[in-house]
Image (cartoon, rainbow, N blue to C red; front, side):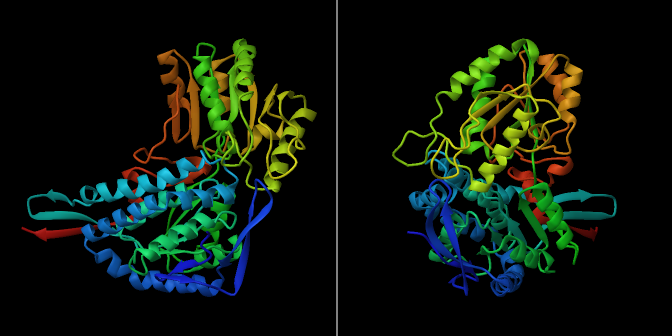
Amino acid sequence: MYTQHMYIDGQLIVSDQKHLIINPATSKHVCEIYSATKNEAEMALLSAKGFEIEWANTDINERIDWMQKLKKEIIKNEETLRNCVHYETGKTWKDTEEDFKLLVDSLDYYSKNITNYLNPEIIKDTDYTHKIKKSPVGVVVAYLAWNFPLLNIGYKLGPAMASGCPIIIKPSSKTPLSAYAVGKICHDIGLPKGAVHILAGNDRELGNYLSSSTVPALITLIGSTQTGIDVISNSATSIKRYSMELGGDAPYIVFADADLDAAADILTAIKFTNAGQICVSANRVLVEKSVLDCFTTKLLNRIANIVVGWERESNANMGALIDVAAKERVHRLVVDALEKGATLQCGGNINQYEEGAFYPPTLLTNISDKMEIFRNEIFGPVIAISTFDDENDVVKTANNTLAGLASYIFTEDKEKATRVSNELSFGEIHVNGIKYSIELPHSGIKQSGIGCDCSLHALQEYFSIKRLSIKN
């Protein structure tokens, strides 16, 4: 059922090492996969570098055809790919759908938009005609986070194939099954060897080896801020480009004049979908004091409808955390908050489930800035609410973070929404709703990253600019 092999140089590869995959929902062994060492990493680097010029010079329509062929074969293998995600992450079956859909959407979107994007810019002056062209930067190394295994592949694979950059994808060692399954599909359709490589292994050893190589022209990453710092440090062996989506600390501001039902619906969805393991999930929920009781009641009513579980045949709508260590980390944040005066409205029992890395949907109120949960990314199914009285104060609180990925405002006052959104220092600001799609740029500022995923803006990192100036 599961593909055990790496995909390197157009071949399915074995190695001397194997890596055990555990389902976090059951704590049971799923399978073993072949794990990359420095030998396999070097093989991928040489293959990608050897194919760099040929892939860049391949007719754009041929690359588009390969992307469409891969997309169609991925669609045919939906059941297998989603099942891989289901088992390696402990997500509910429903939550695997977004993962799968984004991979398909990315291949489709970039294959359909790359031609127009590559149209050269013409500048004429008195003596010269200048043609500004885009040229693929070269080999890309992509490090993926474990929270959305297929979606994260889509974020990188679409732009790389469209631009003509050979790519080496290293999924998290926690969730390599779905990536290996994509590698097998690449192999089965006969994708030109050297275009795509997929290999997993020890995150630090393998990552450091790939980053320190002088082969990659671009390193792209989805992960924590500290991981981003480490990658940049280890890669300083040559001049490279970076595109990184890093840690988030999203403020979720609910004013008294907001549609509280809509705010409660969206907050419940983004805090408990994928067990809250979402980089743009609300982290600091800031509610105007006068509506705290009403808003808390609405949240409790919605939380009561959350069914925790994993089996595909069940009606579960929230799955497991990625591993027991993640469950214990989240619980430590909850305990610290309670010891420092927070009020437990529901959840918070680490022993509620007998097996797996499940943690109950939890709601805390009376959160203060002295609590760890207020100063750290929760990345789990816990809503932690603080209150405010003043618009200026809540903006200062929201901006008081090194992170700058997503933020949320809920108010029916359009002028207030405009004022606050202009003052918030985040790459994404959602007002009275939430919207993500492949067409919209996804990027952070400050310590939340550099560059961009999704949209045509993401392609900027994959191209260099060439100027051809011809005397008239």
